[in-house]
Image (tube, rainbow, N blue to C red; front, side, top):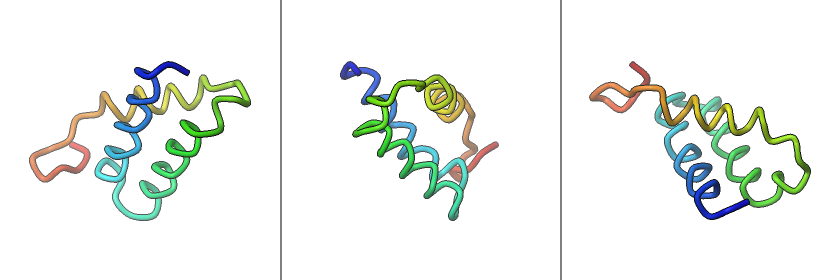
Amino acid sequence: MDHHEKMRLRAAAFRVTRLYPGPVGEVLSRELLTWEEFGYRLGGGQLVMRLVDHVLKTPLNQDGVAA
């Protein structure tokens, strides 16, 4: 996994807690950070990278939550 992909995962892990506040966002954030550190070695990262794309593309309103 290259540096750019790792940075996208970290950005998504931070942003997902604002997009989905509460336990759902926390679980997704931890999953993304764990994937960055270990999971990519297992292969099959298509679903994770689609989640990253979704999180990074979904707009937030002025309060910082999903619009």
